[in-house]
Structure formats: C-alpha cells, structure tokens
Length: 461
Image 1 (cartoon, rainbow, N blue to C red):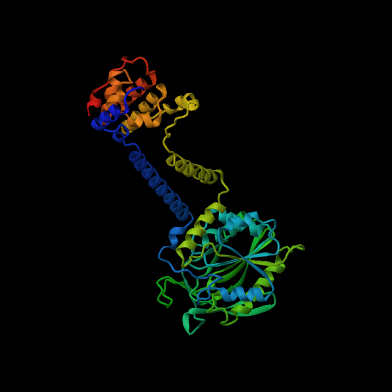
Image 2 (tube, rainbow, N blue to C red):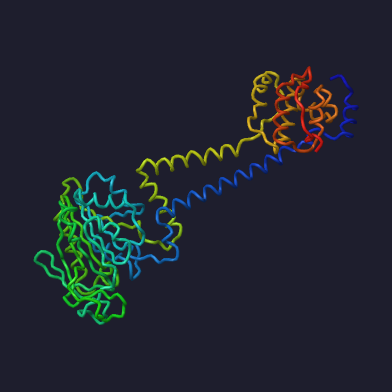
C-alpha cells in the first residue's frame, strides 16, 4: 500500500475503473422490476379468482334490480320504507348469507330475499335453511333466477315457465289471484311470474319435521306458456297452480313467492299487494319464536343483486369469499395467499450487500457474503462482486482504495491465474462454470492459489 497514488491513477486510466466494468446495480434493478411485475400479476389473478368464484361473472353485462336501496321502478325501496314505518328495525347483508351462521339467535328476525341474480353455494344454502330451522323467518321471492337452488332444500321448486291465466288485468302478464292469510283475503296482481311446485313424492320422508300450505293460487284456467305466445295451446294443460306457499320447518317459517314483482316499486301499490305484504310480515313474526331481549328485525339480502358499480360487485365478491371461508380448504388457500404474496414482495425488495469498511465487521460479514446457494449463469457479475469483496476483506482494503485500482492491479492480489482471468473477463459463464468459480472463491484464502478445478471456455467470452 506504499505505491505512488499517481502511478495507480495512471494504470487506472489505462485499464479502466474496476467498478465501472462491473455493472451490478442495473442488473439488480432489472431483476427487481421483473419481480414487482410478477407480484402485480399474481395479485390481480388472485383477486379475479376470488371475484369469479363468488359469482362475479354474472355481473358482466347485466342490469341490477330488486334492491332495497335503489328507487328505480324495478327495485324494492318502497317496501323497505313500509317496513320501517311499521316499526321494524332493518339491516342488510352485502357479503354472503353465511353471516347468518354468526347470529346468536334467529328469533324475531325475518330475512327477505327478493330475486336471486347470482347463484348460492351449498354452504350459503345451508346457512339460510338453518336460520329458518332454528326459529327465523324468511320471505323468498323469485321467478327465473337462482332461487330454486335453495327452494328445493325446503321441498319447493319453481316451475320455470311463464305463468298465464284468463284472469288478468289488461295484459295476460298481469295475472290476478287471491291470497288468504288467517281470516283475511287479499287480491294480488302478478307481473310475468311463474308458479311453485311442491315436492309431493319425497316430502313426508325428506322433510319429516316440515309441512307446507298454499296461501295463494291461480284460477283453474291458468297454464304455463311454454312458447310464450300468451295463448293456451293444446299441449299446455290448464290447472290451478300455487304462487305463494308457506313452509314451516323446525321452529321457523319460510314463505315462497313465485313472482318478486309484487314487491317492486311499480307494482307494490297495485291491487292489494302492499296490504298483503304488511300482513304477511306480521304473520311471520307471530309464527316464529320471540326474543324478549331484542327487537323485531327485517334483514334484506343484497349480496345476490347486481350493482351498477363494478367496484361494488368486486367488493361484494371478495367479502363473500371471506365470509364463506369456513372450510379448512378455503381457509388454507386464503392464509397461504396472505403469506405467499408478502413473502414474494419481501424477497423482491432485498437489496445487495453494501460495501463495508469497519474492521470489526470483517469476520461477521465474511461468513455471510459468500453464501449464495443458487447462483446461475445470469449471476456472473454478482460472483465477480463476491470475489472483489473477498479481496477487500483478505487484504483489509478500504472501499475507496479498491475503487481506485484497475482490474489488472486488483488481479495481482489474487495469486490465482483462473480467478484473475475470471476477474478480467466481461462475459457470462455457464451454470457449471459459475459453480466451479464459486467453489474456487470459497477455497481462496488470499495467500495461496487454488488450482484444483478446471473451467471451460466461458472465461474467454
């Protein structure tokens, strides 16, 4: 270290600065950018899988309806106002019916499901059924949606075809029928609905603790219009068909309505639809167990309604999956994702080991700096950096002193022709050559060369 600094500077100008020949930071930035892009792609894929797995695909290209929080003609905000005016507390489910499993009691609680625009999974169907069976009430109104996926759980099904009757108002779609609730009789007007089908065959064996009754039915001249021509053809049988049925199961009551249109803002005050729904809500609360420590509450199920806002649909899908993560498999996937993505992010943010100058850190850093278990051909520059760090450690050089040396001058410290040749080269090595160089660097002690390993032609690249 007693050489003239001017001579060293002259050699450096001829041979080039040592660290200028080793471009590590651009390489690391490129790798970092690639890792960050991968994390973004993985995150987007996870979010899409969550949304689509919860039925979010049905939201694309469809118009929402039957929401208690929208005032369009085909929504049910007027019904919500009526419920509030009757003195009932109201709440909403926006994630999944799975939240019903978390209720302490179903007593004095009525669930209203108006239109099912996205399908329920089995756990959600069971959550609704258990809510009713344990003492809750439910009004389930649907026609051509996904309501039948859990109606069958109660021993009821929707016919699926369009209901027509000779008893109608101005238009064959507006079927008129009577409903009897207790001693009261109401005239209802439907709008392009369907009919209900009880499970006569398996009812007494499958639903032993349940029984159903018909509250409203069409006239004997009604039919299912299969070809939708509004005229009864010879193959279309005329008969009286149920449109509203009460199912009592366990301690609770579920009412099925084959046309949710009687609840919408445009139809609520036609005929006696509003009076009937008010009486029906009161009838259900009288039929289910009461909670002396709580208030009567009406819960509007909104998780299966399509929002006009794509963000709201995505949020509903994510919340739905989180609520339904009750099984070990789903829970494990979510937990693994929460652990996996932050781990990738942490690895991508890992910075290279910075140079050091304190002598008391030399031994500690010497143990760690050469520990690269998985180097490949793209890490040739990093391996050169490791060799330079070891030269600095073995010879107690300062960072500034190492920077001022040329490649040729630094190679004199190695006393190993192959390592010196590797340090002078600018090309990349093959994987087996990288491994051999790494072993040679580990074996080199700064005083004696190590000539036990032979390398290929990669050093001449």
